Amino acid sequence: MPQSAPLSPFAALPDDARLWLVAFDGPVDAQFLTSEMEALLGRWRHKGVQYHGAWTLLEDRILAIAEPTLAVQPSGCAIDGMLRGVRQAAERLGLGLQDAEAVLTRLPGGLRAFPRAELEACLADGTLGADTAVLDLALLTVGDLRHGRFERPLSATWIGRKYLRTASA
Image 1 (tube, rainbow, N blue to C red):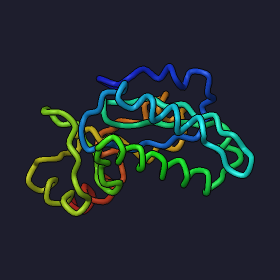
Image 2 (image 1 turned 135 degrees about the horizontal axis):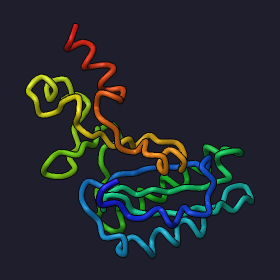
Image 3 (image 1 turned 120 degrees about the vertical axis):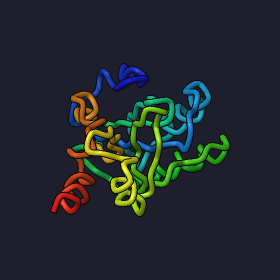
């Protein structure tokens, strides 16, 4: 993972700890997020359960939050509350969030998001290709992140399965 913050905040978490990745629409200084994220995770509770989340910033723009309890005892309400808290914190800090439907890629000029509706055209015109690195914001566990599943060639993702097959047919 080039240019990524170390995963040390997740060092004590098991591989099956639940993971959420939320992308900002541009680079962010991790120090800028610290007080908001520490406060949010410090008050993360639902129905008497205190969650023990950890966070880090990847690629200077992808907020990674992990929590071990929710892997074995999921709570949709607790997860929704945390994600709502992230959106509210971003608003307070004046940060924009990347459209969750966008596909985040690594191009020679840096990270770039593409709306899903543009993928086919970008493959056709050569902007994207089979070897384009895609950052997978849908990873579910810390183990996925640790074991290199965060960044993969486009051909190894759902985009490749959907669009490259139709292009070669």
